[in-house]
Image 1 (cartoon, rainbow, N blue to C red):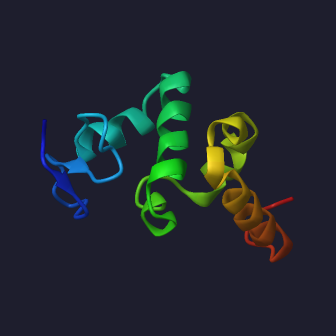
Image 2: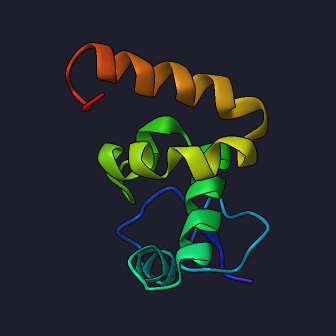
Length: 98
């Protein structure tokens, strides 16, 4: 398995939040932009569950998370309430559309 990293410029290493999956930063970015919608949702859900909220934005945009959120909601476990709070706050503040 590749070494874990918090430095996402090290594209050959594995992001710290993929502690259970041997995917490099580069491979993660590629899969998040790929055509496999099921894989994309799985990885976004993992990002939202396992990564620091600040680090999530290194890989996906807030608008992408908001658009996918209905499909992600049930996959977020204990982090679900946090993401609901954040996205709703951004909608109230006009950062995201309602």
